[in-house]
Amino acid sequence: MSDARYEHFPHGADIGVRGLGASPAEAFEQAALALTAVITDPENVAAEDALEIHCEAPDLELLFVDFLNAVVYEMSARGMLFGRYRVRIDGGRLDAVAHGERVDVARHSPAVEVKGATFTCLRVAESPEGGWLAQCVVDV
Amino acid sequence: MDLHQLERESEHCWRIDPFGEMRVPGIVYGDEALVREMDDKVYEQVCNVATLPGIVRASCALPDAHWGYGFPIGGVAAFDPEIGGVVSAGGVGFDISCGVRTLHTGLTLDELEPKKKALADQLFRDIPAGVGSTGRIRLDDDEMDAMLEGGAQWAVDQGYGEPADLERVEERGRMAGAAPQHVSERARARQRDQMGTLGSGNHYLEIQHVAEIFDDDIASAFGLAEGAILATIHCGSRGLGHQIGTEYLREMTSAAAAFGIRLPDRELACAPIRSPIGEAYLGAMAAATNCALANRQIVTHLTRQAFARVLPSAKLTMLYDVSHNTCKPERHRVDSEEKLLYVHRKGATRALGPGHPNLPPGLSDVGQPVLVGGSMGTASYVLCGTVEAEHLSFSSSCHGAGRALSRHQAKRTWRGRQVVDDLAERGILVRSPSMQGVAEEAPGAYKDIHAVVEAAHRAGLSRKVAWLEPVVCIKG
Image (spheres, rainbow over the protein chains, first blue to last red):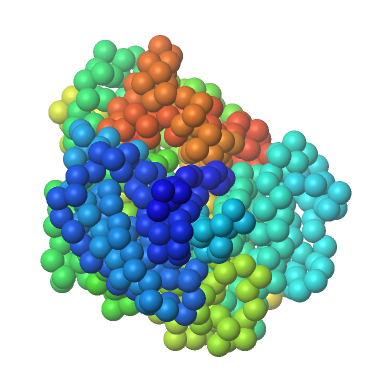
């Protein structure tokens, strides 16, 4: 848990999100924080509401893209931002809870809207330093 | 891009001979410096597109090409349905029918100058921009269907603009073949309160002045004169288009294998044009195109209202409206035979030359205005379609400068407030809800648009007509 973190990586016109954690689920949680961090600082998003997300896919990489796209959808359709994620993965099934609040332009100063998660630089794998990595480019 | 991999056909045209599974050659347009600076990924993507079933003539990259998703951004490819041709959700992209609309204002720079600040503030108040902004129009299910079928024509019927506007929009403002039944509930939910909004990222509303004219005759036919003020809107199909792109990309990724299509890159996800999923996507994509056209029409209406409050003498009339991310059924000559092809333009502008039957009255002898957007601190261009672009690029030209630095790098290099202050010193007023967004879109993050346009002009893809400089920029 203590090593869990997220980061961004460059891509031509857009931006890559990467999560690192002890398990795939933790790497997914961190990558979702990286997704939020494209828009605003996740630390400034209050956990006022909780929302459930469920996805199923034939492999971990597609599950990862489906999960991020479900988050993008909830942000867009509900006008929300999420500052905390809890993910459980069981085979090809993912159950998550996202905690967040409605966008407040003055407080969150959102930089950009994410249109969708892509298959570009998509990878879910054990990282050489140990633990798991989940990453892809998001279109903004 | 390694120039040794390319055969130079002419000063501005480079060829990749087919190898491996490529069915047609790759063609890259640009001068030596532009092509050399293109990412290696562009080369890879041009070659990958050339392997797709039913592609005809060539897989093209335009002078502003950069690394995209499956297709390069600045890519053009046409597919013949009669020989198993495909449609690719990745080849259209997430922001379906994102495009540019430019309006005359009837004002000159001198007339605008005393009211410039007031106009910037009024536009910023009246036009929803940025993350979390919502439009004032809410559509119920029936209205949403009508909008998806009717596009800008629907918007004009609702009172947003004038029938004359439609003559200067591709497809006369309404893309045929829209199938709202193939637009998911999720796509509709994302659009519910986003009609008439600019969005964010590189989307903007700009007030520009004509800084220089390169072709007097065409400029005069387009109604452009030095010092004239124009208003340009750059936005797309908003959440609805993004969701359709997301869903069909995912579905086509899984479906491709069932059609025996081997994808060199998952992002190239595609399906035969003549297949249930191909047809469903084309119907949903046409609906998203109509959503983008309706959106730009509504933003036009809001822009007119803002002008009326600050500069009541202004009269905003259409120069033209082009879309950048599209797949359209069009008739083209291939091997001296006219065929119905599905032309993908990903980050590319359709550019019809003089005499083309789809041009509106008044432009048929001249050619189509090709609107090329720059960054907020640099120039934009108006070009004109050429006859020769038909055989060069299926009548397509460049769409913008393309990024030189990633958002990541831009954010580390510039501070939004400083960018705004620097531009203000140059007389360019920027209004944006997000200073970080401004930093990511700093003018220095973009390639030199002058070089891109010069290459498009010299390659014969379109002719230079006018160079526009920004005066006010509302940044999403």
